[in-house]
Length: 84
Image (cartoon, rainbow, N blue to C red; front, side, top):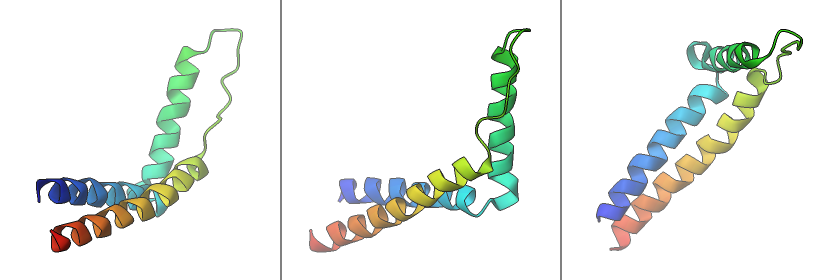
C-alpha cells in the first residue's frame, strides 16, 4: 500500500508539473526559457555571443511528455492499490 501511495504522489506531481509547462500556466515555460538563456549568457565569455538556444517550445514538449506519463503512473498506482 505504501508503494501505491508513493507512486500516486509522484504521478500526480509529474502530471501537475508537466501540465504547468505544457499549457504555459502563468508563463512558466517563458520564464524557464528566460532563466536558461540568462545563465547561458552569464557563462559566455566576452568574445562569444550567447544566443538563445532553448525557447518555450522546448519546455512545452517536455511538459507534453511528462504530463501523460504522470497520469499513467497515477492510474497504475490506483490499480495497484485496489488489487492488493
